[in-house]
Each structure stands twice: as structure tokens, then as C-alpha cells.
Length: 206
Image (cartoon, rainbow, N blue to C red; front, side, top):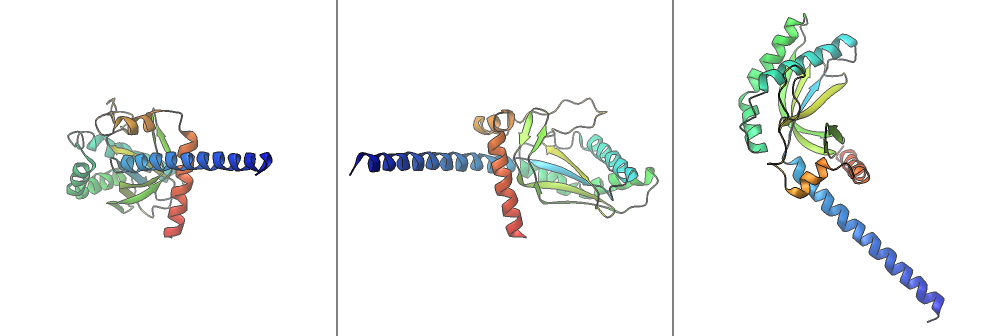
């Protein structure tokens, strides 16, 4: 074997080693992201339309829900507990949203339900949540055809602007490795890769 051929083989071996290490790293990162998704309950409010008045109504409903649910999930120690509380209070949450819609002078219908929803990568203050499917409390106003709003209901990282309540830390829910992912700002490339991968999965599922 000549020197040139040996060098090519060495370069190929090094390239394969780099690709393998990158794949292992991504799989590990993806696994951590899966665990993060299984620790969070999102809130998803869908407006009737993109009209300015419907978007303003969406925010009114959002603020009212956050004010009313501020203490509802405070005692939850897991996603399962938060889901259970949401399920038990679906009728009340629906009525809260309905009363705010009526108070604003609209007669839109409204539906609150728990379901799995896809979310892109989102930043909440110092916390970044990876793209993917999350359990979510969805509140659909009217046709639900307008721009939507979402945040983290459990742990309660989203709070009403008027409440003055401090956001709950995720420290007690995530491992140090997972906490590093959501709080470290240096994972932009990996978050983008996860988002592309998860979006592709969504398209395949149809």
C-alpha cells in the first residue's frame, strides 16, 4: 500500500469517527430533549382569526386564564399531576374563558381540551424548550383560525403580566444535564437540528 492510499484511508477513518461521535452526541441530546418534553405541560390559546380585535380577545382570555390558574398547578410535582388537575378543571377553565369572551362583548364558542401538540423551539426568558410534541391544554376560541399564543403552564413559567408572581424554576423537575440544555444559550445549532428532525417527523405522520 503506497503512502497516498494510506493517507486517504486514515482521512476516511477520521471522518467516520467524527460522524459517529456527532451522531452519538445528537442522539444523546435528542434523548434529553425527549425527557424535557415529558416534564412540561404547555398552554395553547388559539384566536378566532387574525383580526386585531380577535387577537386582543385572545390576550384577554390568556390573562384571565393565567390569573385564575396561578395557584392551580403550584402543588404539582410532575406532569402527570398537572395533567390530572387540568382534566378535573376542564369545565371550570372553559367557563372562565367563556365568561371573559362574553365580558368583551363576543359570542364566540370556546373549547378547552388536553392533547398532544407540536411546538417549534421557543424561548421563555432564560429558558429554551426544544421543538417537538408536548402535552398541552388547548383553548380554542371560535374558529381557532388566528395566530396563537403558547407558554409553559407547568412548571408555571408563563404568568399574567398583571400578577407580579415569580416564575417557578425547573430545577426540581429536570436533571442537571437537562437543565443545562434549557438554560444554556449555547445549543442553538443542536436546537435547530432537533427542530428540523421533529418537523420532518410531523410531516411523515401527516
